[in-house]
Length: 290
Ligand SMILES: [Zn+2]
Image (tube, rainbow, N blue to C red):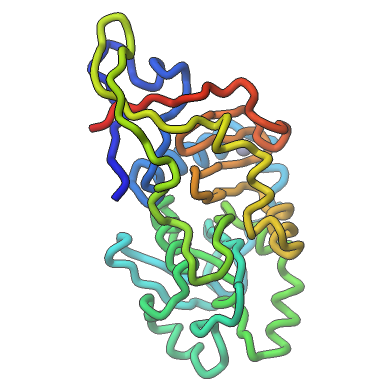
């Protein structure tokens, strides 16, 4: 179990300031803290980035089918809906990694319109439903579920809609490191292997802190294209069409829009895509454990 930590300090300054603007790494990707950060970043883009909205589709777009999801992570319910009224929806970009047993086919559509058995869903799709609810949305588009996989006419029609589906999405959820649909992407980030040290955070604040590798060694951009999702031309296209991305990696969540990039912990760099590496990052990020 990954250790928990808080964003507060016992000193007079917020911990974020003490760390020089660096957020502590978040080891729990499906935590409320992680979802809250993602919501704040997306809402800031909505409010402040007129340039980003220029990249979106001009009129409200809704895919022909979407997964409608309600409830909290432990009480999720989902169903397949046709011709839902235009609303904000997330799209999923992920690797199939083989056939999917729960995909939508003609004989299942009637049942899926009533209820989708979540225990039968591939983990990556289930995790995407969790993120969809976590960021406050009720609709998710996933190719395996929203295109009837044994209907040639539907396949042809929907494949022609890929541009609109990804360009029209409120955000694309990118399961960057899941090589198959069964892997999921919300696992605790155990690769940090944090170490508790005794340290001085400021002139009047002492106590234990949690030390973990900083982005100089663990979150360099050069490692991102090595993830399975970025080795496939189809998903590369999905990313290029998307106006905003939430990229889930084992080392952190990267939130990207054309004007800003944020990380769910670690270095907050103003523009992830334009940098070769994070040369100004500190070697350590210090976090006070709760
Ligand atoms: Zn933006």
